[in-house]
Length: 75
Image 1: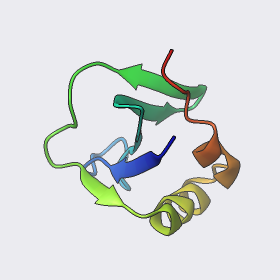
Image 2: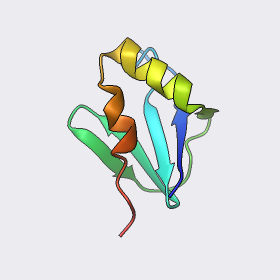
Image 3: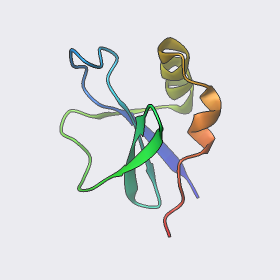
């Protein structure tokens, strides 16, 4: 199942934006304790990012890049 990554717009709390992922039509956001399902649709202003850009985001945020492979599958 394919995973698409996005980055939400930067905010004061998240200057690099939030990491988002879509898998099986479900939107997830990366939180300090793992992936959280987000209801609704893609946030306005969120832009698609490549896997390489998502890896770069992880490095900049001090997050292990392995999390990119742990986006939950829909049940």
